[in-house]
Image (cartoon, rainbow, N blue to C red; front, side, top):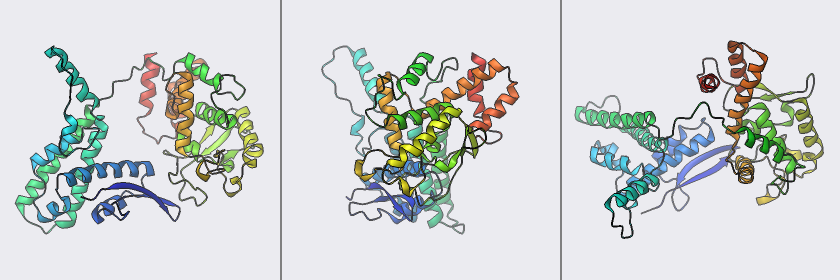
Length: 401
């Protein structure tokens, strides 16, 4: 039985993801064809969906079921086979034998305690509802592609059509059910995303001169990264793709261009970041803009390799030969992992976006800004399209306070 693995690579400066066998060859031409339909979506999204398809193919391979052969013959998969997959899709590990769901205990005489331990162990072995729904959705969409390929509009076999539509409807119902019954708790709108005392400690700790700064090197770069996210509310992807040419250093000198971009031959990163929402201008304090400009002209410019691109934030160490290369998304995550450990509180880039919105509300209330103007300003600053319901999340917080 050949193993399947996920592979990420770059061709003509474009990142790709595929599924390969142990010889690094495409695992299945139909799987490759399906993954090719995802191109144009965010690369992280492509990777997530490829991982879901890998789960699907690995599961059925272990069950010695060829989805291609089943769909081509019209036999499809039975309701029982789908039900078994649905149960396995909730597991953190893919197991065709179902052994991952078994729980081994020491001798515990109290039956109620044994039951409680068993229930807790099973809960810990389950993935989030969103993950399970994604695996089921990937199976459904892959089967849809295969069905369309092997059974065109002229196929009038009513029995196959009926079984296929019943199977498809069942999978779709399971997806929707998992979405409506999310395992995440409902957030309390009265609670701050980052408690004010933690936020103040973070702002002090990230200062390059702070004795509590947890970074041994790259203190100025890391300070600027956290400060931009805190002061502008932009996303991690938008920050990672910032270029020196995006800084508007004339006029008020307090704005940065945020926009989606196409293929960039100067971006050496496989996992290329991008702006998720629409283009806009992000506003930051003038003193922060001055600090960014100083970093670009006097620190970044001294790092070898930066002359080949315009990205502001770069690797300042030669780990794996990346000195001077644009800073990766994983490296930005690592910065926040170190900061979180020092704070004793889990901080990540998107959390600062939520904190920005909270502070935006506080300032707007102090200034007595009309709520309609406030929401229009928020929508622009966040890069949301007209009619977006994202405002509702922050309205709930404001109304609950």
